Length: 524
Image (cartoon, rainbow, N blue to C red; front, side, top):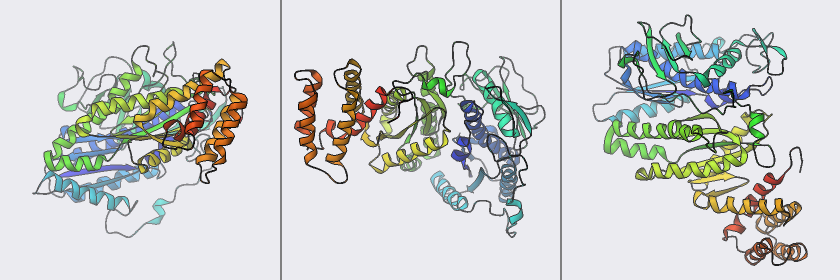
């Protein structure tokens, strides 16, 4: 029997974090981990109800899980009761922002038949959110939330019950969840173990009737009430004090940039490390056509083959990338991982660092999954560090979809979409313009002229005269014989041919250069 679990509403919930009050990065970290823990807690509740062992969790990550075991009596009623109980908790604690859907199927034919049947049922149920768990009629009253007399000053969704002092020393009232997120976010960078107990008493986090403790010291113990233990620093290593049947290999910790004292670096400080304009960039990426690949694996190798690839993907996104970011003297260390696991990631860091990281990451991915011929698409969006991150993530997701719609295996950034194979050439051309501008070989204002003429020549209404205007501009302003002039002359010669890379992607090249040469606080 196969049971699928899927938490909906994750992105809106995780990124609904105000910059007000400081610590946006810390609260994001806590919310991202808490969503992963929700899936783990839901899976553990189901295992307890069905009396299945811990290794029945075949897949877990990104708010989803897959369980496999023998079908007990009255399984349907038991799962309906569990889904109802969990969703009532989510309705109360997250104000309906998150919801869980269960689907299950059993088949005597094959793993593939059971999995496909469960997936179809899952999609059907997800289209009926908050439906009654039995054949009873709808009770609309349960979906009406209590009024907010004093809303939380951060999320504005829940009643303010806790007094909190922000990074600037200002005092305000926040809800229990936002207060809890801040405390957990502070502990996570130095956490060693995650311990899940069957009761919420004396826990750092109470979730779905379970208790979760984030342990920061090197010692911890297990007892009869312990359901699961995860090693946050070395996910695949079981501590000696943890029984084998209580250990789960989960890559829950992400890379967090820290200062010399080991304290997490704020978004505003990360932006100061950017080239030119102190901006951050949000990178959102995921594997292309993974469903097709999984379907093929289910046919040829069954559930074990699908699980093997899923584990490899998670090891790449949540393991390999964390190692690259955290390695000593890594150029990627300023990158903040909001989420990386399963088959996708969301990261934020100094904008030019993120551009370079995107290209490097795709190279690692192509090398790792060459045997499955998997490709990767991504979207990159710039943002100001003092702005809420949610709109930037939404735009990055839109760019990711644009990259996929353009043929996949592409990056969408700076207003254009290109194949990864051309990434280094495009960014290299942009860096060359930056060097010339900084050295004084060209004036920064000329970059605006190049962008204007590129859009005029190859925009929605192509203007053939734009080529003549470019030739006049270069002849009048660019120094003859200089490398910059030689580049400009080649551009004029090819300007009517959009198949030429330096012509086709000139808008993105120039936008990169403008951002890299813009002074802090300068508006354009």
